[in-house]
Image 1 (cartoon, one colour):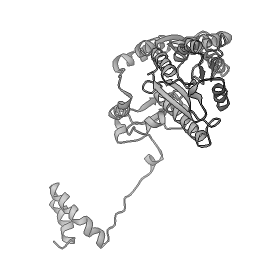
Image 2 (tube, helix red, strand yellow; image 1 turned 180 degrees about the horizontal axis):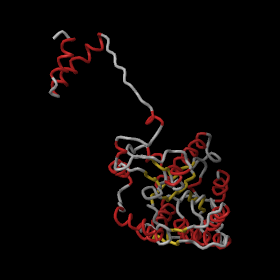
Image 3 (tube, helix red, strand yellow; image 1 turned 90 degrees about the horizontal axis):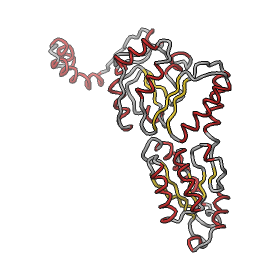
Image 4 (cartoon, rainbow, N blue to C red; image 1 turned 30 degrees about the vertical axis):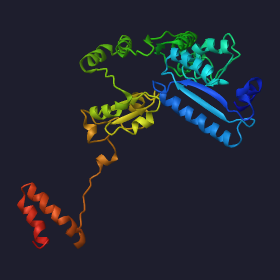
Length: 350
């Protein structure tokens, strides 16, 4: 990366690149939308590394400056930000954009401005073919990743595979790979659900899955009578979970660990998109006997402690009773139990 920046700087003329002038790198990424947690994490890492390089003298004596703008995961804003960074900040390159559709939207900008885009997080086939001399990809096409993932599932003996994908550049590229993998394994998807980008239709996705379940009738009745889709800001997610106090809760978010630390009332918490509840039910090792009916507010999953008999031992010396006795008298009187109060008052010499 540093050699690439040095090469770009050496090939760029102008007063802005006089000796010692900073190497300005632009970033347009999602700092406020669904990818915000991952974007902030990678940006912090990049800044930490650039700070280390700068303390060591920078690149050929020039410090690196990262100028970041928020695009909210919107490809249109990605293009607007990129043009602003190129024209207003005169950046040498763009880096660490996030989103396949966002990266694809940058392709015409790179070609007309001849500005390199480094390490975009995305992987559609369009980002690879035809070759773009200004786009330096971070990963292979999603199509190939999805194809290999499905082939691996089939090799493990899984025969009933459903495909749900987002209707955007990434999803449409990945679904081609998933279907190719299924075809290579001699399988058909048990369900194929398309979800609009930025508008997840959970109900439609659930209905698509119910149609192919052997227990679909029972599951549909449960979904109809007890299911609900609740949309809330991420900042309120932990409070909502605590209010419901569920038996199970799956955190299919970018940073599940951070969110889990804010949750107090749940029987079991499943962290990340690759940890469905069924893993805990059968193979992960956590107990499947969990508190229901909001009992997670005051109880936990079954454990060894539920089979142990415990006896409390209480002892006060003179100093301890002098401290605890008056409160004992006051609480007993407030509860309307004068004999309890008297048992403590006598020992206090009252």
